[in-house]
Image 1: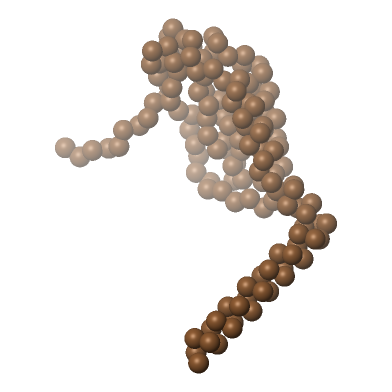
Image 2 (image 1 turned 135 degrees about the vertical axis):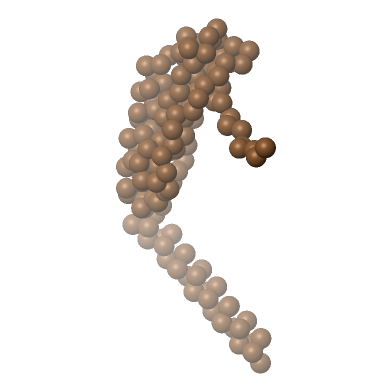
Length: 143
């Protein structure tokens, strides 16, 4: 008896959820919100920006740079991109990253995005066979 009641309740919940989804997808406001909060535009802007970053072509680690990528809802960059200053058009890269940051700030506000509030520092850089890379910190080990 109890199992039948639970199944009936679950079926009702599923029918209700389906009706709500159908109502939301036919509602022009819900559709507009869904389009506005679609991350596809952010992903496209990020891909375009990162395409300008060329990590190879440096002869000295002093030619390596990093730049902030995106914006967390709580502030600060989501990550950093590493590139070689001598082989990257830094002006185009920075303009593309700025476009991404402005759009992501608006996205975060409009869509109620939450994030961690931890500060993400720029990475230490290294040069490996002419290619700039972020240094991967090694975990602390006890003696």
